[in-house]
Length: 124
Image (cartoon, rainbow, N blue to C red; front, top):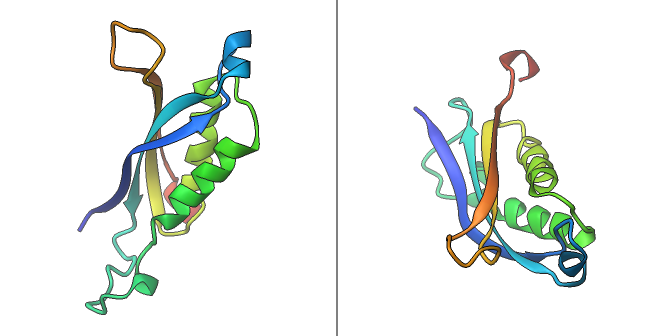
């Protein structure tokens, strides 16, 4: 069995960018996260209780904390920090994170970056 949990189109306001006008004006960032969960991680065992699964509330809380703490020059840096947080729970085997700025160019939906990593089985 393969299982993923995800957070899609999570909108935050962040201090991000290399230009002076970006440093003075926070921007909308849209974040997508997908986590692959280990097959042997309990899928709830029919108990229907949050304690038996990986609660994805931690993603929202940790991402909001990361974004609120400082200025990021690059989306790559922000994306990498979110990815690192995603890999902290033991039951997570891999993660994919993307960040995008929807308000940069008038002729496209958004610009962004996506990163994906899988834990080595020796680390589990």
